[in-house]
Amino acid sequence: MDKLKLALVGCGGMGTRHLYGLSELAKTPFNNVELVAVCDLSRDNAELAASEAENLLGTRPPIFTDMEKMVQEIPDLMAVDVVTDPSVHHTVVCQALDLGLHVLVEKPMAISVKACQMMMDAAERNGRKLSVAENYRRDPSARLTRHLLDTGRIGKPYMATLHAMRGGDEIFITPWRHLKDRGGPLLDMGVHYTDLIRYHLGDVVEVYADARLVEPVRKKQKAIRDPYEFYQQRFKTMPDEVPATAEDTSMAMLRMENGMMVSFIMGVGGHGACRSQLILGDKGSLQSFGNRGGQAVWQPEEGEVLDQTGILETISDFELDPLTAHFFPEKSSMGDQAADWKLIAFEQHELARAVLHDDPIEVDGVEGLKDVAAVYAICESARIGRTVTMAEVESGEVYGYQAEIDEALGIAG
Ligand SMILES: NC(=O)c1ccc[n+]([C@@H]2O[C@H](COP(=O)([O-])OP(=O)(O)OC[C@H]3O[C@@H](n4cnc5c(N)ncnc54)[C@H](O)[C@@H]3O)[C@@H](O)[C@H]2O)c1
Image 1 (cartoon, rainbow, N blue to C red):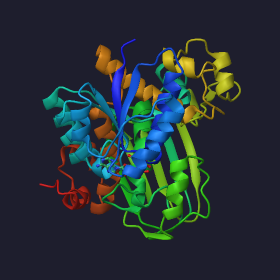
Image 2: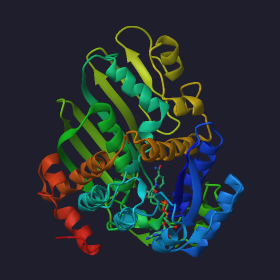
Image 3: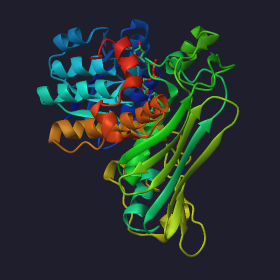
Image 4: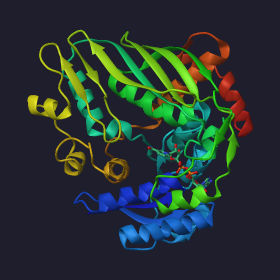
């Protein structure tokens, strides 16, 4: 089978997990990707990733700290998997596209709507593929929820809630996640949810919201549960405290193109938590509609509430694509410790199919930009104290909140 020659760019926490994704893919008959290099500004991080790759894939990839040099030394390199922090997605991705490479970039697509647009322009001018690694919608539970909606199992949806608030004042994974011009927690977590909302319910039209910074000082966690070597090493050198500049709490009302209302609460801080994922239709409702390892729950118009196992026993018209079906033969990722890696593998496999066979990309630049814009619509609405339309935010007509970020990164104007 033809394989996409791919380099990993950005060998931090999620970069490590992308190597596990490649390893999951390599174990399947669908493998269409070959890792040929790893690249990171930090040689130490690249070294750690090369060792991890050797353990997982059996070959130690060469290490680079400069993408241009990597392209010179590996002339048949076809694509990069960009897993850097979001404040440099646009610089790294535009450089890769201008070097003639195809790109898979981790969510959020970029640090601002303008940065997303720069990436789309670069893909267009170079005739290269650009795909955004948004994993939540790839989970079987999200696919099943979409199927139940598409087949009218809850009738016409009219309202939804997505509440994902977790409290506390600990550093949320990395210090950069608390800095507005590096990609705050609302952007980091929010795009997962704006993507899920849009995947299930269609486009957002208007947003009225407020956003707050509740925890201005974030504290180092007492211990780190993540077993990966990279996370363990980084934990040792993490500062005890980080001043936060990005909002960590938000509440929004979204009006959807199909007329639905969505109550969207999201946050990573403060004293208290709430979780709810509910879609209400005129013939039933759905709950817990997707996440890594999640499950769908369906309340039909008549009869008992069905969990995902019950739903799958009841309906016979739900099929997954061949790779997802291979990974999750029970049509569920619940309890699968490798679910995170398998969903990443799916994204890597999809880019390879797009490049090798011109197959479609599900979360392309247009989708990735809309996910980012929907999060910033919250921040822009909070800033100016009125409802904003997505058209205003996507076009840059309403831009004050992001202007500060773009100015700090030298891409404003
Ligand atoms: N989909 C998910 O579930 C998920 C989970 C975690 C992180 N992420 C995303 O993955 C991305 C990375 O997050 P992370 O937690 O791994 O961050 P991280 O800080 O752990 O790693 C970032 C890495 O990028 C490197 N880097 C920075 N600038 C670079 C450049 N110009 N060229 C090459 N390397 C560079 C850094 O040295 C570091 O090794 C973010 O976009 C984040 O939102 C996604």
